[in-house]
Length: 67
Image 1 (cartoon, helix red, strand yellow):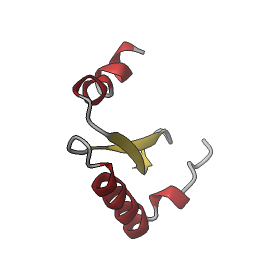
Image 2 (cartoon, one colour; image 1 turned 30 degrees about the vertical axis):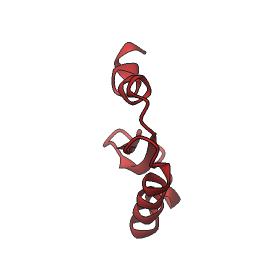
Image 3 (cartoon, one colour; image 1 turned 135 degrees about the horizontal axis):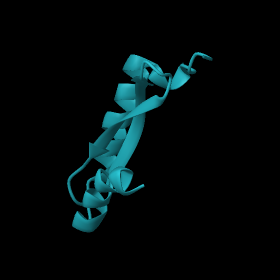
Image 4 (cartoon, helix red, strand yellow; image 1 turned 90 degrees about the vertical axis):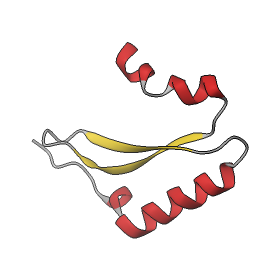
């Protein structure tokens, strides 16, 4: 769990808004997320970017293949 915290705790400690949006799967079928970190108190821009990314890519509709 430590390694997963390393990549997410930085934004929280800095007080920055952050979110993750789906961006595909590994070769093993595990989901991968794109982490977005915005400027302080600029959540609206971050949400617009996340929404635009999801609309353009459609990764959120995909399901992992069953191995």
